[in-house]
Amino acid sequence: MSGQYRDFLELSYSELEELNLKAKEQRKSRVPAERLQEERLKYLTDTKGIKAVTVLFSDLEGRLHMLDYDKKFLINSYDNLTFDGSSIRGFTAQRESDLRLGIDWSAFYWGPADIFGPGKVLVFGEVIDKNGGHYTADLRGALKAFAKEQFEKNGYTLNAANEIEGFLFEGTDAERRFHETGKFTYMNQGGYYHSLPGDPLREFIDTCAEVQRAMGFENEKDHPEVAPSQFEINYTYGDAVAAADQIQLYKLICRQVATQMGMTASFLPKPVVGVNGSGMHTNVSITKDKKNLFWDPNGQEKISTFAWDFVDRILTHGNDICLLLNASVNAYRRLDPHFEAPNQIKASATDRGSMVRIPIGNEKSARVEVRSVGPDANPYAVLYSVFKTGLEGQTAKIDNLRQAERYLPDNVYTAIENFRSADWTGTLLGEDVKARYADLKQASADRCPRLLGTVVKPCEVQFHHDVYNQLLWNLF
Image (cartoon, rainbow, N blue to C red; front, side, top):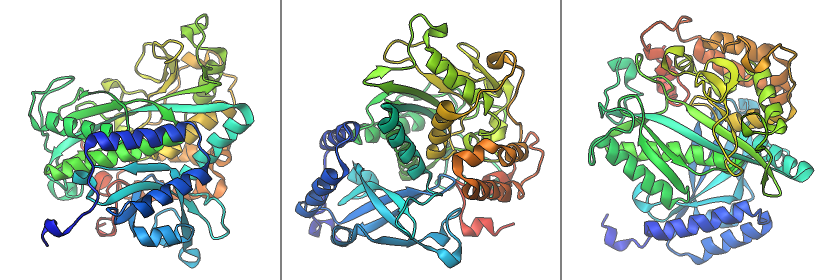
């Protein structure tokens, strides 16, 4: 069908950036939900070039799901968007399958037409159970509720910025075909900060950065990482829920751009043995009345006692929450001390092998960096567990807790055992969701060799939650 008959919305990148930054400011300013709903519905009604609204939500493992609602239908039915939860891994059983999607009107994005298609806007959804309350297996909802509680109770704003690494591989289905090929092919042989203008990796990074900028990410820097064909595209911090949403959008953008270029953007933590893996260093801080509570110019490493207490609780529960931060069989290949891997449960300003690092900062940027996080982890689970643990967890009576000889697991089976046996994970998630999550991880682990060895096995890619589909899962 000829495009000359269509008049769907297509905006320039500068127009998109202006709209997205305005929406971002409304979110930061905590504009009431009712006002945002009214404003967004009016915009959808008045803007004739919009044909559909893409609603995004995430399952228990952090896999992103998207469905398009016809604009006219959504305007009339936004308060009753039902879907079959039994088809989503980790959600409801078949006998109690009906769930609903609520619209989070603050999490509204305009996407470039050349990436997401013309005539569409995006918005994040909230999963609602049959009784009309927050669905417990929707960890975005759990994070949002916790962040709201901390603001209303203590005046805290939870801030996060994530450094997300990934690999660019040849072919559009490199992960899904790994069980056939047994290898990934690099698109670039360079290394840290090394690429030529116009080579495939640089072109990919440039395009992703342009899309992020247009979507209001407020970019900071982008560059090739240490390993061949590895990349990192950094952007500014946001409140915890917005930051987690942006992680999902970041990976979506990278995958879509790579696909359009005939390549695959992979967020497996360690897709190739012998080179650095990919991490998702998670920088967090807490502000109150616009004051950074982690900053103390006279404190140890120039952070406050409040921040050190936060760190001590993370270290205490490091093994308890490891499965939430390192969510796959493949993630434990990355926790290898020979490749700058943060596998030691300690805190340091300089040692990059530490689970927690204290970066150089000032009154604005003082923060704590949790380095052990894998890029395939559920971002809502990561930020929820880090903030709730840091604020409400226990502090162990261990001599020299911050430098003790303690290590994260080197395999997923130990991580699952730690997760199941910890009282704290039940407090975090509730016993029902805790059991569901552990069972999902166990099911994937049971399809893989217990010992990782020195070669990436097809099964650890084939049954990875980022790659999962029914066809591959049944090839066992």
